[in-house]
Length: 369
Image (tube, rainbow, N blue to C red; front, side, top):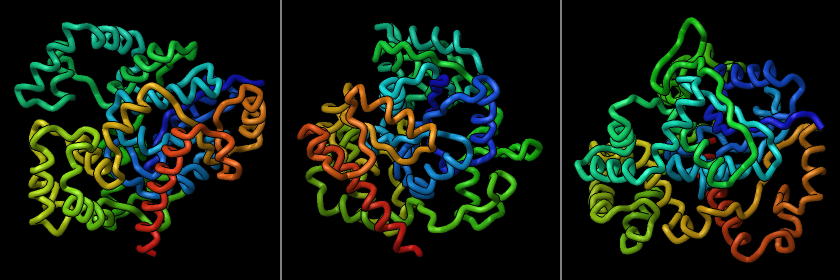
């Protein structure tokens, strides 16, 4: 079998920077089998994906990937550490020999050095001290490594490397210089923009076609405004359970409850809560945890184990990979048929929890048609 290369993606939405990533992998490993673990209907920046996982996975196949599996919502909406740990764990289980990620520095040795530093007692004590001073985690991290600026993809890269060590995986990490603009920037010359820019243009009804391979993303599109009425209801009628939600800190649950009581739209609700201690993405992840009922108990149960691998889409080459993996008796799920025989009770419960999360997503987005 040809070399198997892994990618960790969201494609929210798929744009020219993502196409460049795939093309560079093909240059490095001609004819390779490309496997992506992709966030499902809710993504790591704490948002509903702009289009569904089924539409994004099909686009991935069109652009040259061979197998797309889901990173379930109980991983995809977590901190960078748990997001990376699950993503790398899944790729390793699927037999990837290398995985390739975009990096602002394109310096794997530097990222490994910072990863080792971040595992020391001194570093973690420093982080806690800066957090106690009211800094957000990214700022505290930067200060803990002597104010060295770490860009977002490099930050994820550090967690990918730590995840390799956690799983004791033989998979090798490799970087590609990130050619796209930053999250909030546009590169007009290269016709590349950060995914956040594209989503904002879609929301505002502005032209974004230069940044996409297919020029247009068909509706329905999903944004937090569509989900806020359901989030608000959940907060107001389940306020006593907010303290059980993943990532909720003491005092924050009351702040969220009071804001939900008085604000009828998402932007004012959000503005009433945000402080310099909480990044936008972290708060939004907490909101998704509330909406979906993702508790600390669920996270603790699955943060060190992969309960199943959910197949979203595959090419002919991807199908051959799946056939070869059957011999290893992995918990690979492509349909719900006979699923009770494939998963243990705990894994079955979390599988259906994730399926329900997608049902909520589809229900809300279909209302917009």
